[in-house]
Image (cartoon, rainbow, N blue to C red; front, side):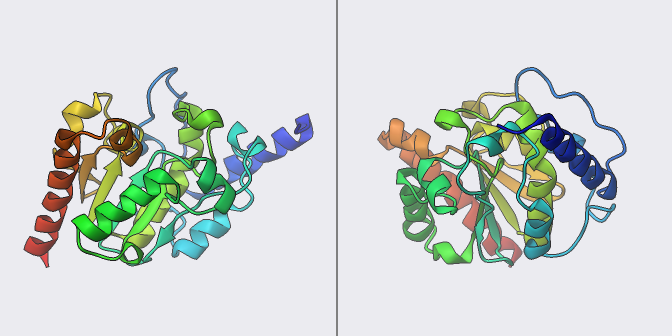
Length: 236
């Protein structure tokens, strides 16, 4: 259990990070829902820290910025091609991810790999995969707004470092956070959005697909990924 001194030290470190990142004002997180990314971090190039993925990982350090750190085994930062055309953003690590320190390695991760390699016809190693939060929420619950807010500066810096040509958000948490909306996933999936000028395609999280493994749900995810590939073909 962290002491009061530990908590104060972590708060001071996070405030220093936010100041160095150019965040001059912090809004109180909503009691429900996901804080929009645009409201939490500076615009690209506006003191966001710069550097590549190694620099972002170094800035994250042994993160203690929210209570998720208390139970985690590993920080799950992300993996893949640091110059990927496609960047996938999920919700948060699960049990297998917390154990290994790698994103999407459990059952949902195996399905995501099939979607990428069999559906999109590209190696998993050619894309970049990360999550909204870097530590496992207890019981795999949806991340709380304050937990999302603590990780957002690092997620946005990851996106800036990779600078993909397309983002695919997996599930409602990632989609609502990056688009700054509060809508059901059934309304959001399959409709192009944008995050800081990068085309963004929302689709269902692989864990949702496993729970509702119907022909219709699988068809919808397949159509979403085909739309991403068609976009990349047009702009190549």
